[in-house]
Length: 382
Image (cartoon, rainbow, N blue to C red; front, side, top):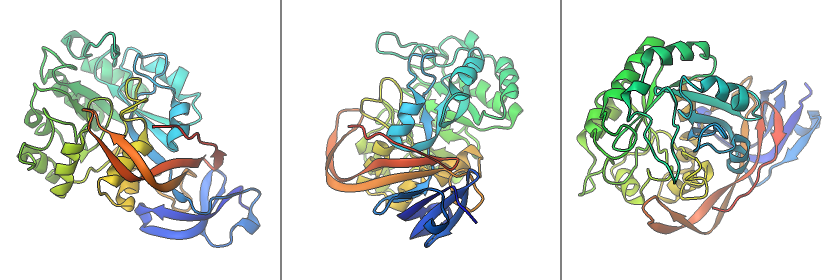
């Protein structure tokens, strides 16, 4: 068999297949064709990735990439190239009122895969900026489940669920109501929700007890208030109960939703996140979140194993998305790969409250393959 492209000499790390070995990875027809030794002799093109990690295409489960259509959106190609992510999941930037424009102007022309959650709020996240910050669920007239279901049904080839944001910012004055409406719409469509809680009210208990198996709680390591850990470092009862019920816990770093103190307490209690994501948007792309690789590096330096960090950025988000064709390098699967450089040194990391620490390792992008085709990455500071 002749391969279109072969990556040679890399360390192939695919947690979904419990694979950690030095091998070549071959692609044909946009799919993974083979993993094994000495595949380059049958290749039309090769790339030497010796000394690099070769993983399934990274999935960032929480981004905002409706660039130009929302105030918080960043350019998806820029974000993908600096983070080596082959799939970006947009976490509710667009709602029923502007989702068709998001699809036509951003998702369809994008060289990187974009899978969206549709926002339960009609206008999506329409006022998220330094100058103006208005929660999309602070006016309950914007939360229309009939419209959300109607538009979602027109785009079910793309939509992975419903996004709802509640809290003192996102649903000021309306409490938990938008979440109950989002759950009803999700039940009608048969899809999961991704829930955001910023500053209570509502409480974390009110949010977590409503979630169903397979739903995602993003910002799971946010600092006080609303975080999973109490002052003594123990985890809240509702957090442990939610994990037992099959709720998916996602980092969703962003500009205000990840604290080292919280993360250390959770990890010390044996509570690792299911998914690592950046929540990259206009107010976090230049810090403190930066992108997926910086967020992954923070968790690596805090004590998660490399395999766990890769799994939380590949197989685990693929499962949360109910997209089994993603997140693995199985032969015949989608030909998406991230090539990473794990480097030793002294790297300064910062969380959303300004706490800093110095880590000894950092992941950098070294290239990626989307549908069997090589794309160059860019190495950004951060």
